[in-house]
Length: 129
Image (cartoon, helix red, strand yellow):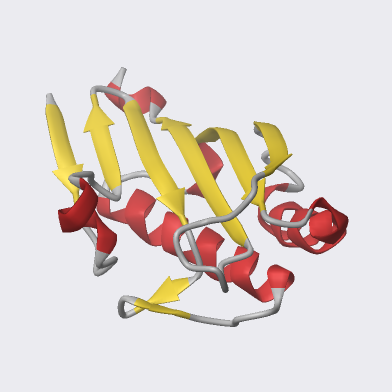
């Protein structure tokens, strides 16, 4: 069984993607930024942007019948690797006990020049396996 979950992000229709896709026990959450009601939140603050992105991921997982404890992998994209401690702190606050596999890489830029962080997540819901 596969189903798709949308959000209020304005880019989903423009690009042609879903916030999350559920395929059997897997939930793949697309790159998620610090948006709220389709607008960027927390410009200039990498930590707050990461917190908001993780909150948006949690909402997508909840809509998919999963939660952060089901996350097995994250990928963090930052526009300035020198801000990695701020992004890492937000990630640790959510995943300190869950400890998914992860990567953090610096990218030249994201869709909006004020976006500092984008995070993807993969979750596995064992009860659906």
